[in-house]
Amino acid sequence: MNTAFLPFLATALLCLHTFTACHHQPVKAKERKPSQYRFQPVADIPTTPVADQQSSGTCWCFSTTSFLETEILRITGQETDLSEMYFVRCAYIYKARNYIMRQGAARFSEGGLNHDPVISAAEFGMVPQNVYTGLPGKDSVHNHYHLFKELKERVDSYAQKKIHPATAWKEEVPGILDKYLGPNVKTFTWKGNAYTPQSFMAATGLRLSDYVTITSFTHAPFYKRFILNIPANHLNESFYNLPLDEYIANIDHALANGYSLALDTDATENGFADGLAVIADREEDEEKILTEPAPEKKVTQAYRQQEFENFNTTDDHNMHITGKVQDQTGKIYYKVKNSWGARSGKEGYYYMSIPYIRLKSISVMLHKNGLADSTRARLNL
Image 1 (spheres, rainbow, N blue to C red):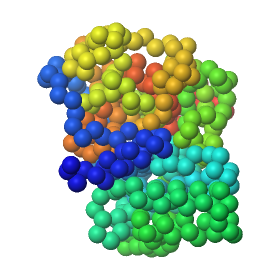
Image 2: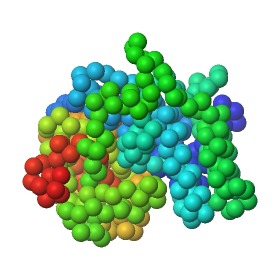
Image 3: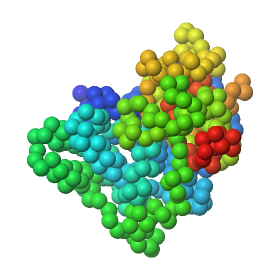
Image 4: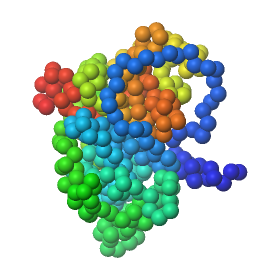
């Protein structure tokens, strides 16, 4: 066996075991005939370069960091490289507290959702990438297998009341994070100015209270907030619920007005491959549609709900919608930024069809000003 592959394999297996909300890049894409697709850009929102989460189950953080960097670019015109691993560090504090206080009757994993960095930034702030790389010592690749393994062992011991005093986790968990990600940041200098993480966050121009998450499910009332009961929602955050057509219309409205969106989606489908995300109408076209246009499913509200409730649609990957493209038949796709490096997919992006988004997207997070006026009025935003 190639021993260089062992760290990746170990992380992938651990993520499967813990239901991490992150789909790991395959080692080698399945060989197919040359693609017949021809794409033309329709809309592009200026964004930052594609990043690579490597062997870490942190797509939720990379997608949201890209989203926040794009928001800073929209607001200030300045390109900023934020630290993903600082958000990861802060999220683990929340996860540990929730898991231990619930005495293990909760989820503790590498995964998360797009709102996690926004919530943690309100308390802990944010920092630039060169201030906190999350790669202490001689490490050059994000591999969180040993980090998560040690954290899980310790929080289990606290949750099972094997360690006293129970509050000692407040010192031990940060110590483990120091070991694998590097010491916490209290003050730093960036571009000649002194900051704390909180003051740096304020200087970005972001107003964290302006960001909302919308979704579309029928087991909760429309135009109300509800706690979406998916495993990765460890912070029990509320989502705004919209009818499916209005949900899609608001994604389109945001993009048309220069607002990108952080996406939570299902990336386990056969049609999610080779830089495409499509839903073939017929099973016999599932392979064909990956190399040439073919009819896609017509996705109703009822079908979306059915697939969610029978677990055919799951939240396992987070990405970032930054534009649209069109194929040679005139069909529109969302241009979705991934976090598997620029050599994956289509230069780091996936082109996701409207039927795929209608069926397989769990939710999107965006600036409230990106919503249509009629929707904002109904939601009292």
